[in-house]
Image (cartoon, rainbow, N blue to C red; front, top):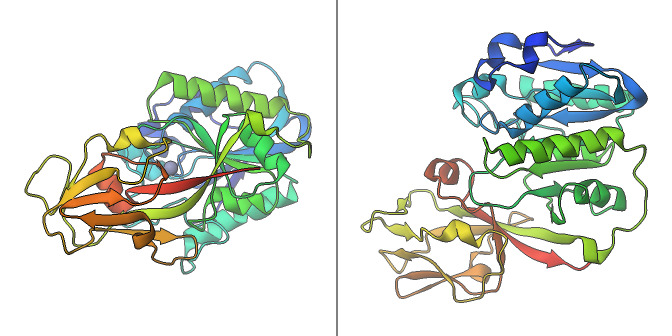
Length: 335
Ligand SMILES: [Zn+2]
């Protein structure tokens, strides 16, 4: 499918329910709106169709500037509208829309070509900064993610939260692709459908439109907490897990999501296993190496951490655990 580019948007976009968005914008479309400063801010939302906060915040932003001039030009992309209309991250036959951007390790497809075109177009337009808005399913604070530790990136992230996550994996994310051409962040705005998440994202995007420049000034260590993702944890294929069935081969602790962004001491139990000879989870480091033993141990029937660590994205959503992962493990970076 061809990428469409337009210099305006249908008025219905301001009020339409996210579930109906695909009927209004049925082709992949890059919207460009002119503002006072010419280098555009780029915003992507709904790369994961069920993560609606970015879309709702963008609606508020477009509403605000339907009555006044934009302080800076704005380009935006509405991601996976088809999955959004069904309330899903992505459809079964689709790739994850946040794994297909330049830098991806997936074999070439039409979707990969299409988003590369977006990056090419925004490169030509000398994009000022890029913001990709997401939600997650577990109990997580709001935070921004960067793929580079440059001052401009940290400033852009710090404007959203003092909590910043530096990550280099997975590949093919929007944030990483735009990092090649401009300061770039991913926002994690907590669970979808929370008004304060929408308000926070809206205020942030509005602030970005008002930024005249990002400087190379150092962000003070007292103003920011930066964590580095060091491993992704998955439940091994073929291991049946549950949060409430005591007969499941892996019974995960129901309090897990309370551990997000909390320093968890070595020895903490994450769950119980039926068969104490089989490690039910895998930890994979940023080089794709298996580092399970570094973080996990089985003692009798208990699955426990053997190292102090800080998890993020722990969720009780079994579908998300199967489609994506159980959590990420992080370490603090001293800037
Ligand atoms: Zn997402």
